[in-house]
Image 1 (cartoon, rainbow, N blue to C red):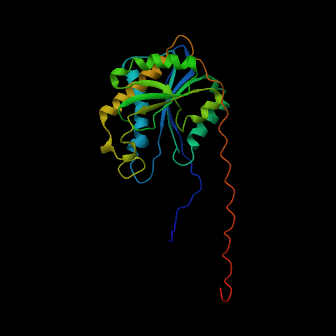
Image 2 (image 1 turned 90 degrees about the vertical axis):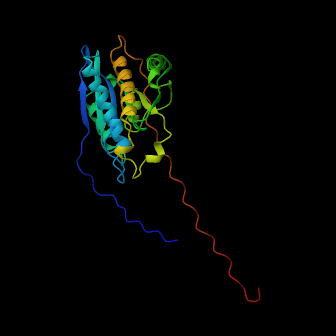
Image 3 (image 1 turned 90 degrees about the horizontal axis):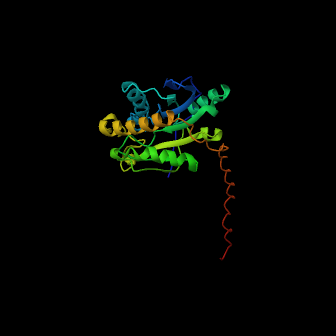
Length: 249
């Protein structure tokens, strides 16, 4: 078989994250982050991965505004750039917040990047004390189809914040259709259910609002150093040539 590839990596180009927030009424410096990522795999429209997550982050803030809710702490929506090809948007956000000395004020980061489907769970790396609080909030959302808040991780754009003790949370919907659409030509607007999108946004809005409005801070995680990249495998030894044939053998 002969395989020819013509892909290449081009030089970096300027881009930007998109950020909006509802400023907290008592502790505006403290942040509960909700987000998704703007870029997508180039063969589809990116409606599921991750246009749906971006819409849910925006809708979470819109719901709070529509209901006249302004929590004690700031709720910030971040639409990250470049998740699919390097994560530079997430890196830029963390670097900017580190320069401002603001990462210690981030209580919780929620990302939706598993499809805007029917609610099933939130996963989180929260410590036991914080997990107990998050589970109490999750129990309020069972009518949407959300069954539990369970131990797990966050998502690519927020994972770096774990190094600063920020609690990570990922929206984990029913994933049965995820790989029917993921990184394919079928990842289009026609595949998205407005009802499922709205249910997920409501869950994210409720979780973010309640945490942002708690009288006491959510207990922070211990800072966790970023995972080191796996060591490159040792090169394979060259193949041993077959023994030369001898006359008469």
